[in-house]
Length: 78
Image (tube, rainbow, N blue to C red; front, side, top):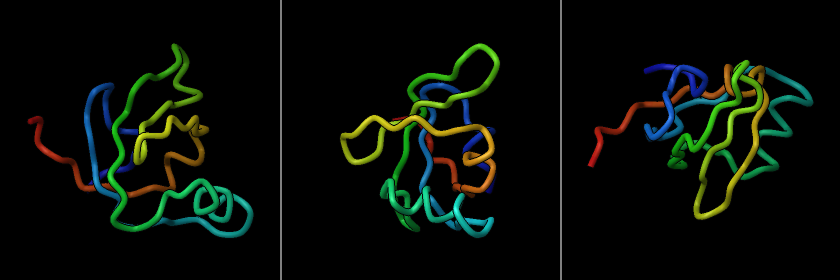
């Protein structure tokens, strides 16, 4: 298990747990990132912020601090 921030471009993962509290966790959940959701990292900015991911056909932009609060199980490349 690792954080979303640790996934490399092109890697996928399934959300296992959301950590953190307050507005950060609420913002993540409002975007549809919930336990069991499958994410794929599309692009990472040169300095690591933001991180762009695909979630259910949508493209989301997450801050580095938000990505550290999303624990994922890595999915093997298909």
